[in-house]
Amino acid sequence: MQQVREKIELAFGGPDNLKQALLATLRIALDEVIDTLRSGRRSVAELNEVEIAYIGTKIEILIQHQLRTTRNRNGVEINGTNVAVILNFSNVWNAPHAKEPSVFLVVFYDGASSKCSFGLINSSDNVSFGNVTWLVKDEELARNFWEGISSETIDAIFSKKSGSQRLQYLFGNLLETPITRDVIAVVAQQKDYMKRIRKNGGARDALAREEIAILNGEVDSQIIRELGLAPIGKDQYYSYKCKSDNDRILLISKGKIE
Image: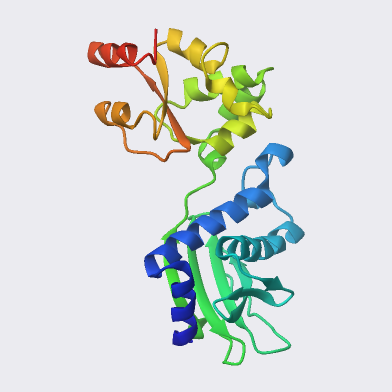
């Protein structure tokens, strides 16, 4: 199994890259199956058994796409080894079964603690929890954005009639909270969703009059540092309300508020 582990680590560019890739893949798989935009659901707890079972398949598809490899009914090919995904929730051990020798990527996810683990096991071995070769153990998975937002705030956001109004409420009430493009798309509910946070009629204009600036993690990285905020990604945004005259001078000079 050590050889299989090394082959998989090599395919992803090393142990650190593998860890980050697996964490990101699980988060994407969960979010795409939850599908907040179309279903209105916000957590794994709202999924049915069929949808939960599909998450394992979704992980295989995402790995296949990331590595530009092939996938068949027995799993996804990773550097010459066929790997099937078995998903376990709340650390309940679901022993994998195979009609032919296979390597399983066993994924454990506990929604309550947001902890997850990834390990390898060979179907030709004694298939038990104790024989798992761990790739990632008890790491915290970034939560779905909506899990940390109160039901009252969510209801208030989606009660607004237009995309710009919903985004104005979102950014106006979740100050200094990293907000991704995906969340913006869910809230705007329009094809040109990024237009709704720009100037000239978007939420940015209304918020600027309230001395609230919308800042992008890449374009506005220097401003973010000067305001003492933690760095965020290029596809993330902060809303920030002036706290001092220095904040006001900085944000006005950069054209972020009026």
